[in-house]
Length: 185
Image 1 (cartoon, rainbow, N blue to C red):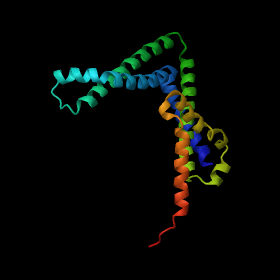
Image 2 (image 1 turned 90 degrees about the horizontal axis):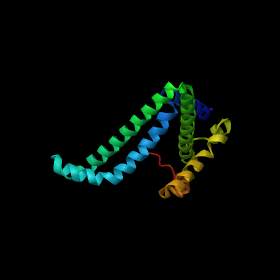
Image 3 (image 1 turned 60 degrees about the vertical axis):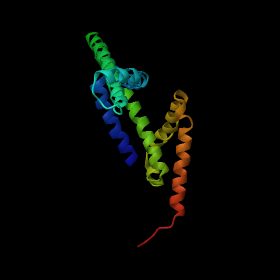
Image 4 (image 1 turned 135 degrees about the vertical axis):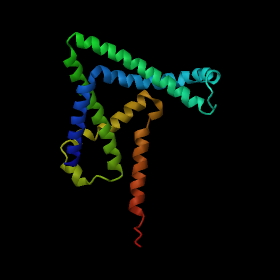
């Protein structure tokens, strides 16, 4: 039952966020974050080189400052483009489709996030078998976590096998907790 209440809370939050932001801003926000990180990783050296001659800042802070400047600049630029596109959609009287799309996107993102969190919570045995058995939504949420992490592994090689490794790590932790005797004062 507690899992189902969490699902309901996450869905309500997704509906609110989807209505407020809409699909266009949501998609562009995700893209802005990814593009901002990629651009900052590539261009922060160039910006740091420019800043060292232009600004009186300690050399140890230049990489952080240049990364932040590029990241924030790209994010703001992409969000500005999203605002222009959203204004165009609103003028075309397609705002309702934008809002519904935002609700659907945020509902999917929130359910994926909840699924991954529940995976970790289940692996460290914070959820009882009774709680899982009483949940209506558990059978739908449970397979999402591995699917999401495996998908990241296909897109980003650093995430490959991460879900299996995390599962093994948490299984090992659970076994250690069972083996260690309780110490009573």
